[in-house]
Image (cartoon, rainbow, N blue to C red; front, side):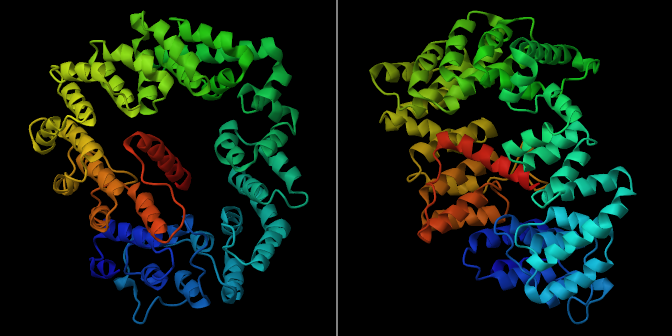
Amino acid sequence: MSLLRSTPLHDKWVRQRLVRLIGRLDTAGQHQSLLRSVLLDPRETYDVRDAVMRLAHWRPPWLKLSREEFSRLAGRTPSYEGDDLLSRQPGPTFTLSSVLCEAGLDEDSEELARDVLSAATPDTRARILHDQRPGALTPSLMEWLFLKWWEEDRHHLDKQGDRGHELNGFVALECRNRPGMWDLLTQWARNWPTDHLKWHVLPRLSPAEQVRLLTSHPELHQRAVAEFLLPLRELHAALGTEGLSRALRKVVLAESLALVVNRANIVERPEPFGRAVKVLGEWGAARPLLYELLCSFDVDVEARGALLMELFARDRAAALRWTFAAVSYPDNLPLVMRAHQLAARHPRPEDRPLFLRWLRDEDVHGQLLAMEGLMGLGESGAGWRDRLTFLARSDSPRVRLNAAAGLVREGLHEWLEPLRLVAVDESPGATLRSEAIRWLGVLDAEASRSLLYRALETPPGPGDIGGFGAPPASDEANEAAWALNRLGTPEDLARLLDARVRGQCGWYFDDELENHVLRQEGRSRPPPPSYWERGDLLEFAQAARDREE
């Protein structure tokens, strides 16, 4: 906490990360007063204060502003003695909507909030009503806000054109369980573009509610069928077996054509392609059609790749059988490698024949994926060691490095030295160094602590990118951070926390650090992920962050 107080106000990236970490790791709420002081101080940058506000994403609604705090944030009273325009940070200020939706109010603030909302525009009140987080406002204030919209605001908004209709629709969506609101939602949905429905309306409905809305009017139903927005059962009922098959084929071929000629932007790609692929995977009767399209060289390889990924997700054994048959045709190599990569990232015992086939191949990429998959399965034995020893003399530095890692796993610790040399050598490049650090973290983390600590300090290079506007972190530092996260001693975690504050490892370690704190408090949390579990974890974390944005 003292670090936040001592960090200069202008160092906004460090202060933002400190705020997020305090909010995530302070599970007992001991430092709420410090975070409140940051939120209420107009001398802070907007981004840092907004980081405090957004902590509600993890513990909603956690602030519950008092009357005085709400008055200061709403601009009704000065933020502190001597507050003036010259002492405030330039830039955006909090909207009334963000204050009420993110922070929330306690009961003493209700009367003031009603006065402020009475003076606000119908647009602002409608946004607050549909963006509301559960528990942020008192039930009586929510009821007053809804009645204000029902009796007055919705009529004003209807006169504003498309934007007003949209706001009314969102309120109807949010309040759809109130009497009469579903009819309004249906009426407004008929006039919304399909993309609007797909991205902003349907995700907020349950599957049953989606079907109810999309079948509530013939025009909506027709659009939903054409865009494959309905479940398979409803699509089949609307089109029949032959009609649905024709529609699926048409969309896949249209996507293929668009991919072929789209370099000149001649043909627009069909919107429902992704959903059509999912229907092809789910519908058992469409499996012959899926195989036909997957095997057709007339279909663009990228479109075929989407079909193969869906088959892999639905029927892994069938996808691997196809992969073995398809490898005989050179044009299929990109698809074969895609399936091989998926299998290597999430290896299962039934994938072993695929890995062994590529382990014996001369293709470098295939060899690397095969070693990764077989090590994930715990492959062992004399034949495995012989092949690794042979590959350790490969012309490819990456193959040599991974073969050495496999030999270390087999108990041949003399092969640790090549890994250590690459991990500290500047000449092979950042990619190879980060891979060496990764394997040392997996195979020899305890004895490699000093090297991992040093790698954690690696500055980012020109190829490293940050996330969400933040400065980047190097791959070497991130690989070292994963290893220290698994080791989990107080010293390891202290170094990891310090690196995260300085932005030298990725934002997803916020989740890992919070899990360590919760485990120390005796709460049930999954153990730190192994190397082979990290892909799922990163995909999950990214999806969560996408939803937040």
